[in-house]
Length: 485
Image 1: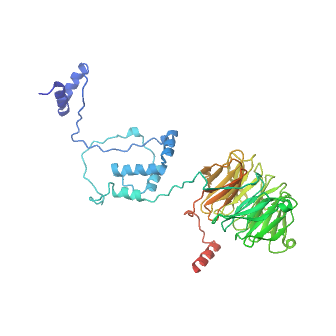
Image 2 (image 1 turned 90 degrees about the vertical axis):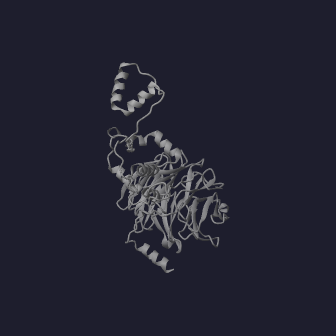
Image 3 (image 1 turned 135 degrees about the horizontal axis):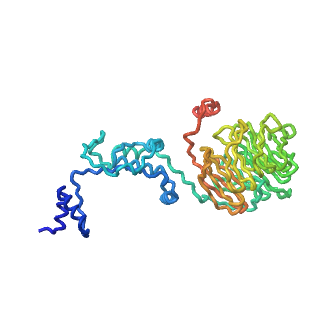
């Protein structure tokens, strides 16, 4: 009725005696080819056992490239692994963060010492308080795992959301021709004129024209209220303009060469010139009564920035020096000489008190961080190209840098890890000009290719990890005023 081969296979699986008999016969004879294999699964309950993957494979180039192509992150992989453990092994993991910490703390067990299958009697089903009539295909623990809060991945567009023509925008490393006001108006120096562009209405107006004086614009800077703009000129004087009235309200003489750097501190205007002087003047009083001169740089002053608390002024020069000044002395209180090229890019951190970042020119290419509270240098990163500008995010511990020779790129950095968040390209000339929008989300960059490009690089949401000190009196006053309104 049955073929001999089929009967042999049935007897071999059903009877131990027959199994031994046929094994001995097969050893003594030549093997025959069989057409199928029928396994015996009686009294077996196979439960999949997790085998640890070799940790070195996670960092392989093939894995990293596959994750980038699929948009997969390490957290996504960990969440999927936890979900499989819950459904196949009943691990009851309900938080990805907890599982990640346990994975880092526990040592890996070699896969060779662990069996893939277990053979044991079936155990009684334990629902662990779960409802057996749930409509979800996964367990309650897995549902909680999938609902656990996840930090959304921020994607930075590599394409500018707006591009404006800027004819006669000079390709000069030592000038500062772009600034964005708190009233959302952009001031740009083009040749001998200053133009204002409203980000709300896209309306363009001409503020002033210096061509009758055979002069050109070398720097522009808004005050904190956004109603007054200072204009530095090639002839060495500075004009102050009331934007609402479109009228010049002051003219400040004192420099003998072009003014390439300007910085406001309330109504006090600091100006840096090619004549190596820094002059501080109160724009509300007569010039000679309020003038204060700071001498220290041996070559042109090309960068000026006040600290967020308006107590310290940082200056950078073509002599590769970075100086920090206070309001009580005409000599610098701190001097940093580590840069190997001109220091134009300067930015104070709004999140870390006393933290100052500076960038060097073509021969230096480095962004350096300084603790001005102790006068000690901190981190340093080689960017590979000339550092033209720096700006910190208002809401997170990130900063953006613009570069010249030789890559002409825009880089977004995470501090303090100094990892690159994004790299933006598009300018064909050095990205010499940078300004941050009043909401802290967008930046505008300018270059010698005579274009202004607008990028969304920072998040609006304030960082949840930002430290808030109860000793910050000014923050408490602001909150009281806000709630009283």
